Amino acid sequence: MEERKTIIYIMSNERSGSTLIENILSKSSQIVSVGETYLLSGYIHKIGPGSTWDWNCSCGDSLLECDFWNKVYRKLNILNPLDITNTKIVYPKWKNKDKQKSDNFRAVSLMNQIYNAVFETTNCNILVDSSKKPFHGKSLYKNSPFNFKFIYLKRDLRAVSISKQKWWKRYGREHISLLSFLKSNYKHRLKCWLMLKKVRKEDIFYLKYEDFFVSPQKALDDMSNFFGFDAFEMPKFMELNNDHTIAGTLNRFKKREIKYDNRWHDISKKRPLFNFLGYMLNKIG
Ligand SMILES: [Zn+2]
Image (cartoon, rainbow, N blue to C red; front, side):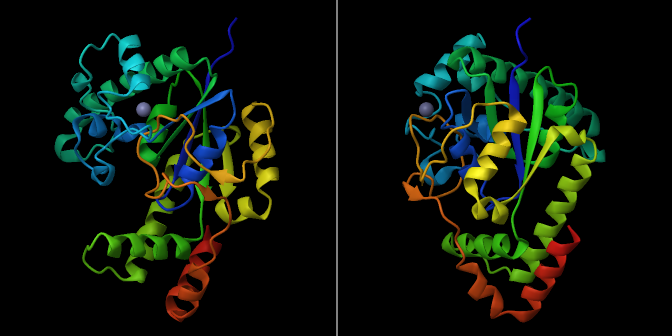
């Protein structure tokens, strides 16, 4: 019997290193990374996040023109990619619960078909989806026809808050305090925790961003054991290499050395209350 294909779903907050981990894993010949498939329909229709690079695939072509994604559409028997209207699985609110549930049902089924088509297109047996969203991931996990596993990636809440505030400013958005970011980032952590309670322990690989940088090769070797791909040497740089990924971190197009960015430490120290609360919240979990 053919071995079941594996999905590695990266669950994390934004600004937590998910694009970096995805990029490293994609250097294995057994692994294909497709980025944040959650945003695929948005990228096809050019709506929602992604306007900075005109919603293009990481190869530079639009989602209507990219060769890789066109192969995927053909495998799905989709003649017009604009027919793909929803790849987001969203927590149903009571107001439109039934409609959301049936939309979600269709999105799960479509995502499974997309995963299959990607496997058929690439000859890889492991696919990395860095959609990050907790509910989206949990919904795909439930009754998945694949060997569905998670990387739960956590980064210091203070680092995430400072990084988010920096990008927020860069986009000229209204000022939000670091304490507000801290609060919403902690809430996000609780959401992940709630969703992962519904996942079997043996299907979760826990990864702390900070621990990763203590010994990147060891972290990569641990992942190789956990997910069952051949060990390989940790790349020195984060760079795109014939990849066709959706979304990801804002500066992913630049080749950058993989190293720990400690600039947030000084900023945090200058704000004792924020620094202390963040420290305590990190301790809680
Ligand atoms: Zn592409």
